Image (tube, rainbow, N blue to C red):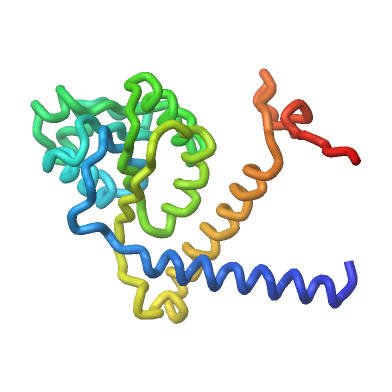
Length: 209
């Protein structure tokens, strides 16, 4: 690639990052979101779990899936750790131990949504994680409406992300992962029995004139 091409690619990457960071910084937690059939929360912080449980308690969803739970954690231990109501956990909370990353969250969540025939789901995760989560979820969940519920730990809408080294690091890391997710959405992939991921030529359509 020529120097001019590298410079152009760098400008596109930097511009895309600026747009991504600005979008994330404008995401806010809805004060009174519309109700849905169910709620899905992706593990990764106490604030996410608290927000999801509050939505469940307020009747915004009939059931809650906590996706990506440590295999060593049980429903009872989660209930104790979050201080959640025992009756609420017993009747209306499911946990997923299989998911190891956002793609796994999407795969396991899709199974849960399909098993319960839900048509609308509130998705709870942090604001910086929401764009990629929605992208991955939409690849697997195509029959249910996804309602984003971004959790904001630190306000970034005043432009503070541009001067915070920690915020820049988180946003940059998430941006590169988002780009990888976009690439996966463009190039169909399939898994082999030994765990390798390959381009799925059977799902690639070639148009001829």
